[in-house]
Image 1 (cartoon, rainbow, N blue to C red):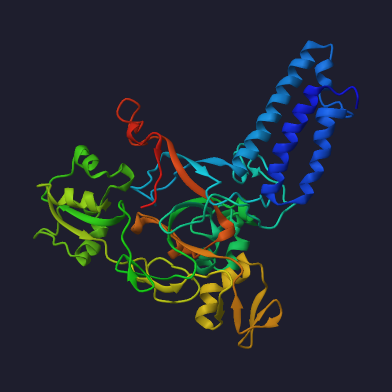
Image 2: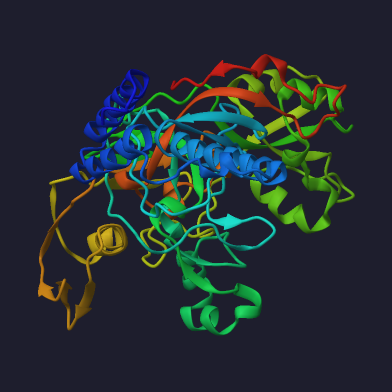
Length: 466
């Protein structure tokens, strides 16, 4: 110990202080064993950590120097990605126009507190599948239980939140949209398991390796939420719509097609422009909605496209537009949560449904069991079955259940084109990833590099809740 320099002691002191702060933050006493490693790295040096630097072969030193740098970078990225922030790209239009397809975000893990990973041994910067190799990017052992360390705040109503897809606990690899539970309702479990050529392998994913989704938190734990005619009510009180909320409208022109400049004025991407009247098969739908054909059975050009309130007002002022009708509710169409129980709830009229809160107890009956069984079984890891009309939880008869987690109800701002909690249910607290805080890049896939490809007005814009 006498040969240890003052400089070594200073480096050791700084490293140990920072490591102790990290251990205190993690609230895990086992991490204190890491101080033994710090002692050897900075002081005793019994393990030759940098032995490769003394190699007489310059090529060996050069290669190992690259390896050392790569390993350090991967470890640094791994810890930054888990505990501080991660990059996220908006893949779909479910939050338009609040967040756009092609927005690249920094998602803060500190906002709600970072989670200790369920699968600690995983490759950084990929979610669940290694590119090119098409295999899992993580090892299934060891696995850790859910734990979230202290953050800067809690999820609040109207926050835009990144979370792991709850219904992604089980997937059919080749058919992941809709989710596995909707596939079971449509095709049956046996068909899915037997027809691997179409559905692919059925596999389980840990919480932190389920796909990342981003939606707006509309319902908080303990809320009674209801959607009536596209309006959200909390505990019977109507809530204010997000500023950029969109609905889908059918837009009839006076006879001519809309121009590119008019689509851009309304903020309609090429993917969202559907000319319905061009297909005779749509005539019945258009008549049902309320449009009238001429004596030849032909319709004026009619588009199906999403618009915000501001875009709707602009559309009404265009002389080329004759009539605008909001898309009617798709009653009896798509499946809505819970998919295996007929509630009568639809896209535009959903609920009322109570959002589970940690420590709250509910009475179990047929409808409650349908709505909350995924929370009880899949998210809170209980066994659940019904025998001769009696509900058994963990092999014990049960007439009530007390929730272990808080849950949230997420919806997209693009209300008619968003698969959200209306489709797959509640988001448990252990699925919360973080909060988008900054758009650092935004690319418009409909435009070329010299025609507005980069949305300069969105660069380095903060992401705010309404």
